[in-house]
Image 1 (cartoon, one colour):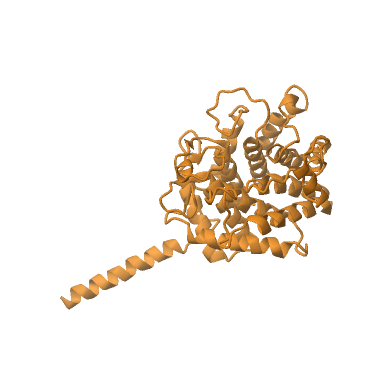
Image 2: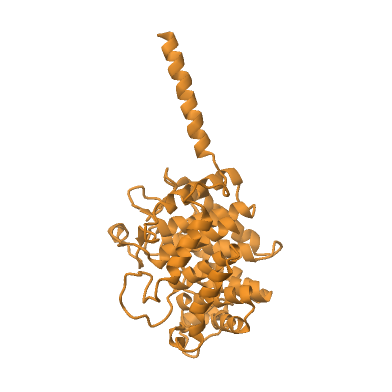
Length: 377
């Protein structure tokens, strides 16, 4: 009996050790077949090129597009990042060919620079400029970056008040703003080296951190919607990541943004599910697992680990687990599944629980491409 107990105990320890070994795998370079960022990113970039311009992030929509949407812009940007990271000149050429008609026959699809969701489009041509040197791309990007800080003639009192304080007139204190504003400004800084762009982004981010970051590091969807909605928080995580990735090490605003970033990452770690996913509402375990938010958090963690902002073993393991889970959510037609549809604010929990779960939505395709790029970068 004693021997049987001893054998059982030793076997249990062995199983536990193997289990712990799996959980502690923090490699962001060693991937099983079918899960490498190179093959996954290429699948998603090719899927993007095969998808016509759409009227919304939901690619099942049949409505004729009136402009390039912000979620498509983010997918386009991710595809170009990936092409650069993999030195895939053919892919880059085809992504550029998709853009060229916007200078002439499809010029009507250029978003008007009158809203944060529209101005983020400027981050796409700037990446084409950085990789190809085409001056037309630079001029178009700076148009979107600068109009974000140029007060329009018909501005309202609140917009004027923000502009007078040095912020963009497009300020709304909505959590998704912090990618839409920071992405185009950070990209403009990368392209020009003009500090006004990174200073703008940093100042804006600090306003949002000081105003709406919760004590636990997360963010409510809005002051009246007390739910830490996943994708909204994902935009914040990715926005902080983009500023920190672009700004110089001695920038005076860097410590404050890094503080907000660390605070958020630590809390996200606590709410990650066993399979690596995060949920539609982050801190409510009854909610379904959602891919777009998970990919955005994964992007922030991958970038943090690779830049030395986050402890490698802990956050590398979390990012690895998330990536391995996320790839399984890509179907045979290269669509990311379980993507929350576009979501307005609500004080009703059921509103978030019952959101449509889209397939192939740009909101989910985009951050998966960012992750693939970050893993290779």
